[in-house]
Image (cartoon, rainbow, N blue to C red; front, top):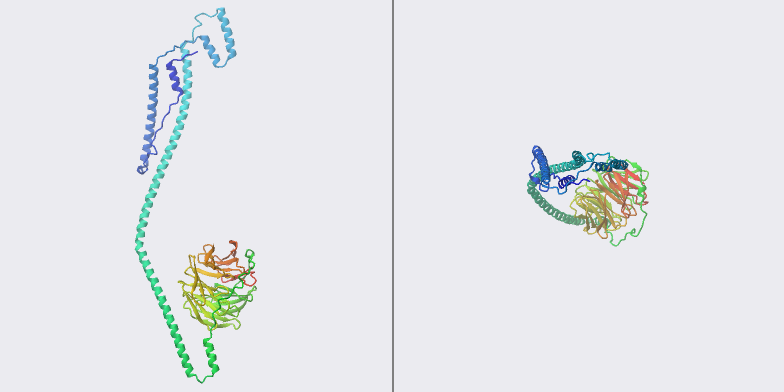
Length: 586
């Protein structure tokens, strides 16, 4: 048995505890990002100095620990003396250490036998030489120290890897911070420059705003003055006509009484205003919705030399009329597409067309600022209305056939008496071109769509605006009632279609058809399906009742300008396009 002294025990304890080596570096928390050096060479020199400082600190701590251990060994006094190990105990310990039990049994038997027989001399039964014992102890200590050294190497390698990782992260964050600071400074400079640039425009904007306000005031004043002069001229005209009538009466005493009555009848005859107590016969009617999901283009008709701007169905027979930019309008039989009648007489593009409720007359509007009334049976122009001062966009007959309304780029809507062929009412209120006009079914209300982004309802009898619908963000191209007259669909140049409930004067649905303009919208006979003529050369159909998209009818080569459902059977629709064709879908 080996007993160690205090100095040996302290030495073993020192070798079994791993010494903690701190690899210090600059703390990231205390790092001042704003004062980093930007020179890469300085950064490399700092890293090398930090590495040298860490190595020197490690050596100093290791040396201090070794000196402390030696001082402790010299100062400590062994309180327990080590007894020398005899030779037989040495062998026994050796055999036990390596687990040689059978060899140990044989050794002990032979050892005691030889010792009893006196074969060993006393000089031979001495202790194991001290040098050998010390060498064996040193060998054990070397093995233990090698194991500890290997562990220390592993710890040091792991610490070095962690230190390298932290240093790389530190350098990355430094570079990232420097880049962020540079971008921030650049943005600050850009903001200052933009602010200075904007300040230069502020006086100009203020001046332009002031000029615009002055121009609008002058415009309103000029409009009022124009209306006043127009009313004055109209009164003077009436006075002049009365004076002329009196002169004619005094100079034509020889005329017969029958001739005088006939002349008065012709000059004073005017149609009465429609009654206000009429009801819509389709208010409580329910028709089956058209199955547009099954529609396909069955026929394409090309009979014009320019873009077809408007299409209309005859109220009684399967005939379609088209208005075109080639200064003509034509009538076609459906579904064969045979040409029935062609009208020529306008000096500019024909923008709108409408059938008289009895189907005997056709009204057309044109860019030459006129509305022409055509007699279908006689195949000639019956009358030309020239009251507008700028191009006329659309026209529409009243359901009784006594009045026709038209809208123009001169920002007015006019109602013409079909009996006297003169303007009976002028609707003023829009501040931009009026792009479309139509009647509410079986009523005296006129619906208009204007470039001032509004939809308006007017009273035919009084000429006053009944209601205005606001909500569009761009010019309104078209507006149409359903058959029951309680819903309006309006579309604008942004491709937005809005549905309005006339009874509560509110919007209840908005449809976004895309970035192309929505040129026209029309309901089917049931009022449940809406077809939209889009600027992307397609017809988009929606189910209003379910509020879902139904189908996208494609086939035209250019923008679709108008789309109309067949009003009698409700089994097909006609579309007109800028590609100079109109198509039949069923």
